[in-house]
Length: 347
Ligand code: FAD
Ligand code: NAP
Image (cartoon, rainbow, N blue to C red; front, side, top):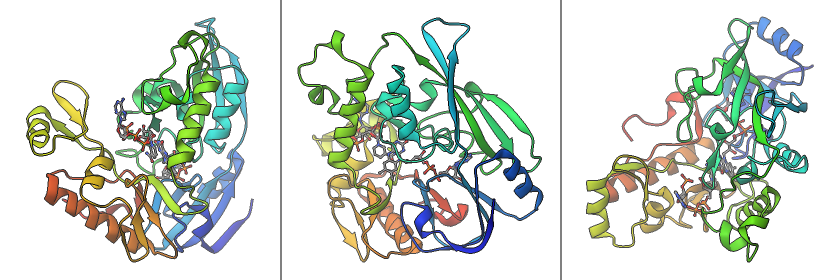
């Protein structure tokens, strides 16, 4: 393992903004990680593939780029129809999903083509097309950064919610997730195809003949047709979470905007797609300087070339303020913004 001084992070995160890290190390072995932690450099930031971060200034400490690899499977002693799959946290998420499908294991197909590492997936409980990580994740192994202790956590203890977990809240930057353990189906399992355009992409395949692999292919085709490739256009996926509201507010908005899109959640709560709000407010494809809302999915804020982290942050703040003024919703960033207090309180 080599530790580097003054490294430009532009190639290590998908917004591609140019910021310096005081120290930088790529770690593929747990022993190296422990050595690094003993060096006492602070603060530390764990980076996977940088597909959900926005740096608004240089990082004054040590960036640990996670490159731990390896995966294996074993029968689930409690259920003959399931297999326990273990994966190291530096593996690429999509490659891992495709590998599980090659083993004829179902459960992760709707989460195909989400960028990033497996180890970052629990941080925001990644989700897409009606499925989220928490549906299939059983346990995690984590390294407590200030003690160097390895701990085993049950998924149920991680506070998983809509695009969130305790790793994004009270446990932020305290643990490095080292391994994940999934329970996946080795038999026919319930496919989730009702979301978005999956059904139309499956064409005329009768429900009883559909496979997890076909659902994965459909999801990949939809995503490729609509989402910008970060290698071509810097972005970190959806910049904001979808806001939630109550029935009365939703009904009042529906009177004003009969084409309002909303989805029922629980007990009179509704989700309003942030993308709909941005589109209605005229942000789709709109740019300010070198930052824009993407032309097909306005929720994805893009770096159109050479923007700084602060320019991207300013753009996002402007967009959020406009949505608040027009619809009353307070948009909350989904992207992890560095430094943590950079998003203005109350916006
Ligand atoms: P990073 O961006 O490197 O890190 C994200 C956060 O996790 C940081 O706070 C970091 O410190 C922390 N972290 C990283 N690794 C670890 C670890 N091992 N232990 C502890 N903390 C860690 N997200 C979805 O949920 N659904 C989607 O459909 C989706 N689509 C996307 C599409 C595009 C085009 C892009 C660019 C992003 C999309 N995302 C989506 C967001 C992103 O892919 C996920 O959040 C992903 O899990 C981030 O992985 P990463 O390795 O790049 O994490
Ligand atoms: P979409 O299918 O056009 O849908 C727009 C929004 O409506 C989504 O935000 C989705 O909410 C919601 N939605 C659609 N159908 C729904 C249903 N049947 N029930 C409940 N909610 C429904 O969205 P898209 O941009 O193409 O993305 C497709 C999927 O990939 C979504 O799940 C999205 O979250 C995920 N995605 C995530 C990111 C990211 O960075 N987080 C980036 C790209 C795509 P949800 O977002 O809550 O699912």
